[in-house]
Amino acid sequence: MSESAYREMWEKLDLDLAAHDGLLEVLGKFYGDIYLSQKGRLNGAEYLDFVLSEVHGLRIKELQDAKAQGKKVIGTFCVFVPEELSLAADAVQVGLCSGADAGKELAEEIVPRNTCALIKSFIGFKLAKLCPFTESCDMIVGETTCDGKKKAYETFGEHVDNMYVMEVPQRKEASDRELWKSEVLRFKDSLEELTGVEITAERLKKGIRIVNEKRRALQRLNALRAAVPTPISGRDVLLVNQISFYDDPVRFTENINKLCDEIEERIAASEGVVPEGTPRVMLSGCPMAVPNWKLPWLIESSGAVIVGEESCIGTRNSRDLVDESGETLEEMLDNIADRYMKIDCACFTPNDERPQNVESMARELDVDGVIQYALMFCQPYTHESIKLDRRLSEAEIPVLGIETDYSMEDAEQLKTRVEAFLEMM
Ligand code: SF4
Ligand code: SF4
Image 1 (cartoon, helix red, strand yellow):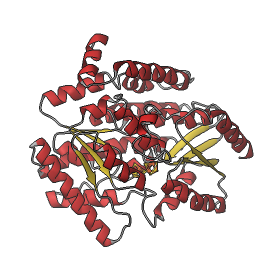
Image 2 (cartoon, helix red, strand yellow):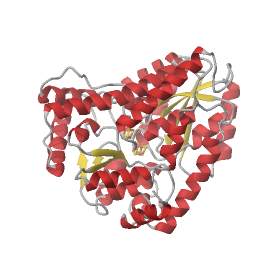
Image 3 (cartoon, helix red, strand yellow):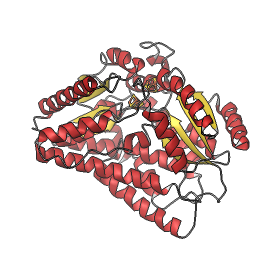
């Protein structure tokens, strides 16, 4: 598609073209510095570069084409929204979480300044007319996870059409499972009403299979990172995880499996993206939405390599599959409800699974240290970081806690702290 055709499409979506040009320019430069400058990248990374270069272009065109064929686009902010159901309703589901500071001042007019950067970012992108994904949505699904998000959806909802909020329980008792199942059913009904498509057992089975295949590809990729020397950079795997929320799921799975084939060849040849002996670090904590690449870049440019992300844009989203043995619609809906109740988000209390999951992941990947990442003003993850710090210290796994936002102002200071941590490890 030509540049002028893209501009026409963005104009129809009512984007602020001048501000959007500025964003794409900054993003392109940032991507070049952080991604294209890497040495020893896999050939399969071409897929990542292509998707990112077309994230506001070809992918948006695909969404418009899908809409022209009568399909609906569902936007989400959280891994609790079951994509299986959206696919079964013949809809396209895309992530709307944003990882850049754009529109921050506008966002601060409708949410408190001491709100985490992720929330301010998705609001800022909307108010500054920068996000073609948000503008393509027929329904935007929020969820009652943390207080910041659930209150932000009240005001955000005044600026978008068709805002829908799912109630996510805060505990994991039988009554919470019951509540969550009823929310899964309510979401199914709303999707059917929006799309005019009845979610049958056959359709849902297919949706479950597609999303499971996507998660299996991510599991395969994550398992391969246990190899020494590390076959792929943490920056590239973060990008894979970020793209998993935007690209077509079948195309994504195919490309990630090809990438894994290439990684297996690299492992068989004892080749790595960094030399053996490079410090192996794992990230744990808040999600890093695209283009939030600051901390991974600082870590990897300080001489370490990231081998795992315990995060929703990481293993928290791919660790569990939906049981595929269900035959009836009811069984499948139960299996979906059960799978999503396993998510160990810090919004749950108690949340004892998470420290266990972090420790076992650190051991499986044989890491030299864990960097706990929290967005400033994120109560759930900063609270849990204290507990996790204790647990990892008892397990004699070095740990560093970092609280930051999307600005680059603290980059030098963070780099110094990361370098000191790597030396100490
Ligand atoms: S961290 Fe919690 S609220 Fe955020 S995307 Fe993950 S599950 Fe949702
Ligand atoms: S990073 Fe923390 S405060 Fe921000 S949306 Fe996620 S859970 Fe809420």
